[in-house]
Image (cartoon, rainbow, N blue to C red; front, side, top):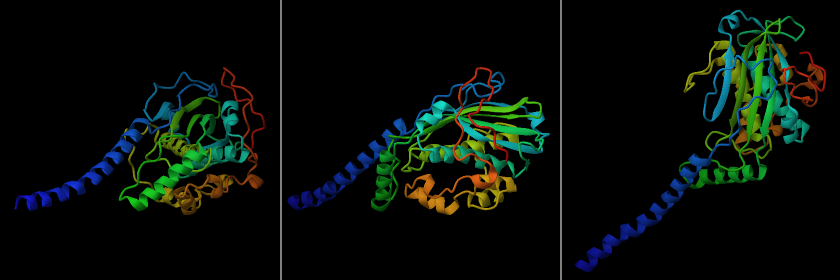
Length: 321
């Protein structure tokens, strides 16, 4: 009896060990992703705002920002103009492909225009706006395409072999830093932000492109800055809210609230999400700005300098929307 009893007890032990080892590996991957699964982008002044004296103290851990909002004046705003986003020389030099640079800058403009047009009237720069929005990309941390491709392959493979999808590899992650402000008709700053964020292993999609992460982060910045101006306050800690029907419609590629927003092109919608799920570069699904009828340059103008007084000296003349 004893040999038989010992034999039956040994069976579950041998079956448990491989499973225990498998979960140990998964646990190690999870811990590694938590400790090093986010790209770090310094929060620093780029010299592109008309003033930095109004900005508050730095906030945030993964997404860092310094914000100023003139709440009372923002309540009076009805007409908005958008100056197409530019890049500093430093940011532009990190991405050699002009098409990729334009996709990132246009992603900011599109997000701002689509969000703002839900509440405000969007007018040309020459249309006597109550506020003019100016954004400058001060830094880009390029995504490493080969690492992103490997991460996407592992992610797709894990979704087939395992009941849960493992996090993205915490290597080769990209990031973005932006400065933006809203100036009234007299050139007085009514809102401003210095913002930076790095991609992370959990929510950032791995794309086989140097601007894969910067492209997604650009849209996130444009939306966040716009919502702060609309609400007249910074978002709360969790920042959980249900999107409006308008937001859902435009995210799926629907018509924006203003015809001028068409200059920045429609959102790639479902096709873009499908492409991102397979790691496709943004250029495969995003048609970008309608340069032929909007006056938007074929490539974003690169700033010639970073003047200490915050004045914007452009390499090209300002296009009118």
